[in-house]
Length: 411
Image (cartoon, rainbow, N blue to C red; front, side, top):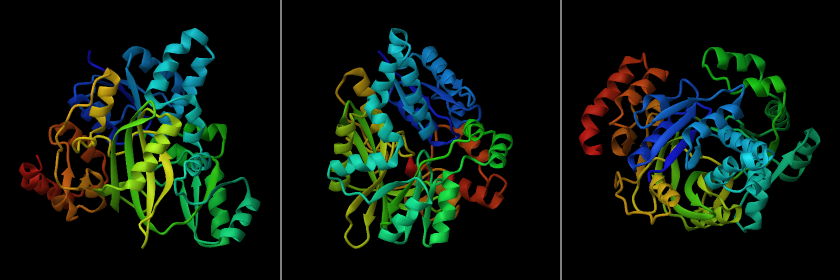
């Protein structure tokens, strides 16, 4: 029996296509539900791509599930995960008719008790504290009065985070009272109609139309500022057990507070232990990410948030205990996890196209393992066309030079 994986995403993120390729390479059938302009449609790894309808998201998810009959659903962004939560509760109300979909969702991401924790930063930090994991102080801010109380006790710098945000979009680090109040108002407000219209018309991104029309605001949290280095972890889980995990320290980001572009593989007992305890406590399944800060001087690991979805490192096959698609596909099949080889012995990974977009002259493009999907030329071409550097011929020529010079050593 060959397992079928359904990659579910509402965004245009390139990384979901990489994840599809990784699952296909280990022998899975891979289907997708994604927007029409997602890179998943450019890879030969995807058998069928179903269209995500931003104005009727649950119906489009249900259609894809019924058509694909997957053994596992892997959400590729936060909104996709939230749709699975909402679909679970809707199908639960349908009784026996919806039970099969409910069982599939629980098998894929974990039980419904974990859903509220995944969607609320403050609740998640409370759970982590109960598990005796080191975390920064965190609290929900209902209004300016709560903000002023926090400032009077904790001072500055202060980190403000909106629930449901990702890629640094809903995070503000502030250093003064007026700045904090302005940031709180902005984060609590529903998406601006003019910005939503621009995304819909120019970027063909319709995800924010419904939130803008519903005029619902975001829950905003205050979090203690910890000075340190970013670290990130992604775990493949099955019924509360960590099957495989990747732990990295972040070397470069594509932009400030944005996604990582260069990472270094590490072993860290605090991070490993925290990940295992949270997966066990929440009985998680599927792919789940955890972000940490390694405090300056002490190197103590502070857990700062959870990503209830696949992150951009999920496709990396880095050997036994570090190959997440292999571990998950084996769990779905009820088989032992096979031994696998690593794609590189270099612990430093330059993610494609993130590091090239950050700096096309970056030395990491040659000194690190440059994570280019060589066997997917259509995917590479599509990625280049969509980037802001497509018409920058000097950057393009430099990338072509990297391709030709380093392909043999990387492959």
